[in-house]
Length: 376
Ligand SMILES: Cc1cc2nc3c(=O)[nH]c(=O)nc-3n(C[C@H](O)[C@H](O)[C@H](O)COP(=O)(O)OP(=O)(O)OC[C@H]3O[C@@H](n4cnc5c(N)ncnc54)[C@H](O)[C@@H]3O)c2cc1C
Image (cartoon, rainbow, N blue to C red; front, side, top):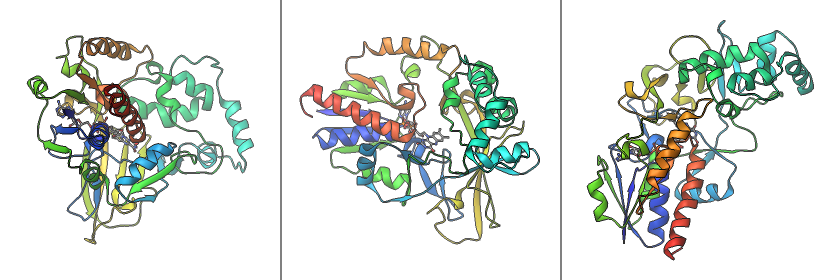
């Protein structure tokens, strides 16, 4: 029995590998000319590895995900750091920590307890926050919210914090000590030594898997396959008959410049009202300098609507009233009628997922399907 997988990103690759190892023949198609989905990377003309769709930092708390991914490549520990450029040019640690609070308020706190007391003083009273603004005001107060989150949210989502679900900002950690790593210390943080594309080549390198790139899904394909796991946008599959599921996208402005002093961090976020959200200095990431060329590569990100960026869908939009999640639920009801198809991954299930979450969900989904076939 041959199975079709649409999408050679993490979701499709995990399904394809799991099914192939269970003895199925799998054809993976992707409309792009490369494997890896949004995690795709390549070595550019400056001898630097660049993640073409924005910096991808692998972090997880899942032992099964780690065990699975480590089968396909070598990983090196890497603790990611981000700085936020303040209006006066100073670089503050992000997520907000003890040093960020001292920089913004001109204080000299030394202990977590002092920072907690300060935040408790400046926090506003929102016991039952109804949106992102109320959650942030109730946690860190007005000044930090309006400095670090308000202009950033406006340009990233083209929405006010008041219109956004609290869940969007709850993902961002808050520290009251001096730890300045971007992800929580409970996470295992790793970088694939040979890059993500090489990792995907290993995952998809199974005799039961055939990869067809530059191939767009068409309904007529379905009759050749016993089943289809589909990572394409679910609304597009149904010809948008219930309406569009919107996404934010990003225009990546790549530039090349002579080598210079190291940046304050591999990623710098902008707190100003301008159009750009952040900048990535690729050679400051481990294993990214591949050759010495005397030049380095930097990418600046400019968020936009996906319709203004060649339909490149990156971040599903979450509003405080949950209207797009309601629309997605209606599409799921349509999808339930497709007996030989399951929607998978970020665009198939209309949710923002980190790489480890996609791997976890896809491993579970593939194993469930195999069990239902009696072949797990
Ligand atoms: C800017 C950005 C930064 C990110 N940073 C991180 C990070 O630091 N850490 C982290 O853990 N996660 C990060 N992520 C999330 C990560 O990219 C996703 O978890 C992962 O890519 C999801 O895999 P996927 O297979 O669901 O989707 P994708 O990677 O998007 O793969 C889907 C594939 O399906 C193909 N496809 C779609 N429609 C069709 C069609 N009709 N026909 C054929 N092919 C089709 C697409 O071309 C694509 O290659 C980031 C995401 C973005 C957008």
